[in-house]
Image (tube, rainbow, N blue to C red):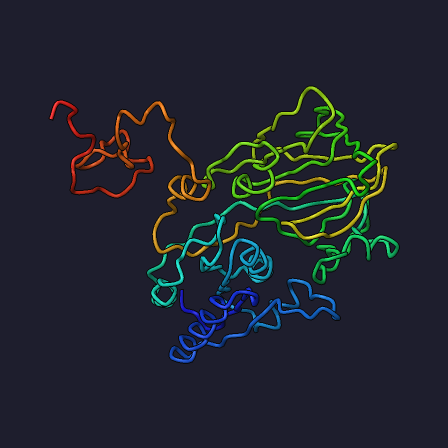
Length: 360
């Protein structure tokens, strides 16, 4: 792809991000590419919606984020409004979304501009609700205490009035959509439906509906499984449920998740990719489902998800295996891949032997 316009999202609290931003602007100047920093807010002003940020950047072809996964998610919501690709430069500590190291940033930009970069698409989530989301004025100060300016509630994707299918909200979630209790002494009571059928009524601190990409975020912290980001699935994870069944359900991508707030529930806060977007009351409902839109991510090489999983979570080997010595980090024999396995993912071929002969 040829880059004509770029949107730049910078974690301004990190000096290394500011230095990287200067390098990006210099690259843009050398290559005659327009560059606009977006999603920059001030404490005394409201934040703008994604389509407003996308328009302010001149409808970019590429959004570059300089920071961690939070910065990446800010860029992703803007890119989604114009179907731009996202390049995440890794300046974070625990993230899984940003894969290009800062030292490779200029190389990545050159590869994108010359059409040599890989484009990997990720599943996203969409949402309908029984009514437009709002944040009651009496709750706004409490919910935003200690936080930076929040995003405004999502607009409707069209002007269709609410009917039995609710209203389509203009949101894109790359990681997750979360409902949580507002008051500590009031649990969330939810009727949870999968593919239109009741799974169970939950009394819990909240519920998470995640993508495979988001399975390593809040869902994982709540006890959910890790899923490969290369697959499509809808992951439902309850948060501290007061019931025996507390397991995650992994549904097919064409199976929507419905969450109905039951009559005796406390108020429910709705967050999209970690950003507060509204409050639901008893009687309200929302539906979360796989979106048609897939977010294009820029990669220099195929995603090495499992090595990153081992490194980011600092996975350690069982002490009982110490006597066996170091374990080979790759399981890929030399030579061409057999025909019956040619459709599978393997790391690149290496020159050294595979598993050494233990007999020497």
